Image 1 (cartoon, helix red, strand yellow):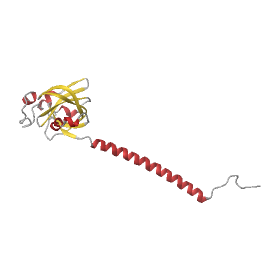
Image 2: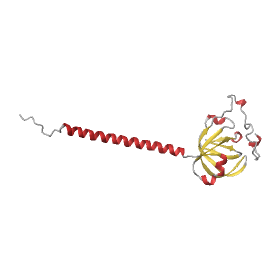
Image 3: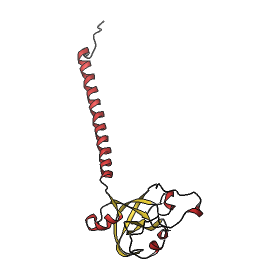
Image 4: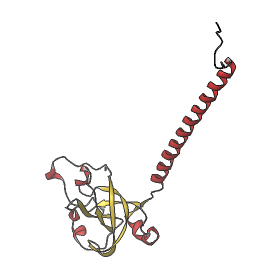
Length: 183
């Protein structure tokens, strides 16, 4: 009786080398997947970091340079200008006596209801004839993302105590006339 194998049996060294090659390939593939994932996360983070931030007065001053690029704009919400209709919230923000009309297309956060709350909005300039508390303008800011900033000022949970009056000295330097100046 012949007990020799019909196929050739690999020597232990050859088998070990084959296993090492497979293991190296697996490690290489896993490393490439991890590097690709890290590159994607880094690129996403850099994209968010390059979305620059402007105060309302700076954004108006740099409107031509900004064009239709996305950026973040900051200012305080003028309470008497807030209107909501069909999922669109329109309002005006002010910073250093410059007023910007806002057209916001998503639901604002709960803190948005506080009068004169500072907000940061993400979006871009859009062309359109607008009338606001400071006069007329040829552009408005189309926003789809809003961040409400907490203030150090105390706001009671009791709605009767909240006021639409501007913070002390906030509008003292402003020369325009309108609801914001009267508030």
